Length: 144
Image 1 (cartoon, rainbow, N blue to C red):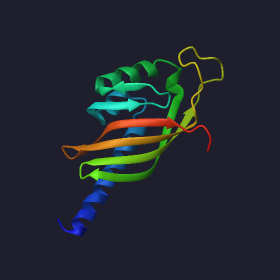
Image 2: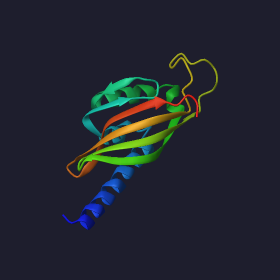
Image 3: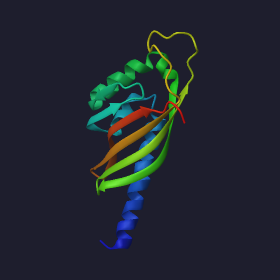
Image 4: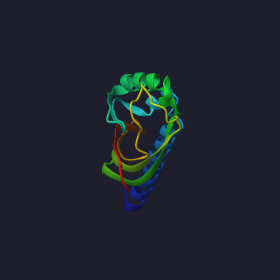
């Protein structure tokens, strides 16, 4: 592959990764298409520090959360960097912006308010020419 072909391929991969992450944002309240964007053994650590393993675990955690006031917590992801660790592995750095639309009353289902911003890192893997999320780790940003 020539350098020009490699650059074109890298641009196509970058665009595909961005589309996958846009889909993840779009489906954040729709468990089935959301989990389809992940590898079978994906790992998510959310902004509250909860670790969820695998598509089935992600689906169940998401379904339960959407039955609570957490359904009113929406996020927007701003991609700040994409680096390729290998041709089929990308590390994506993002800023996660949290919109917590729940009221200020105490919430027994969550206990505390969430930070409004987090540092999010995705590890993405290309499987059968489709970029999927293998890992997502969000660290709260307390002060900016």
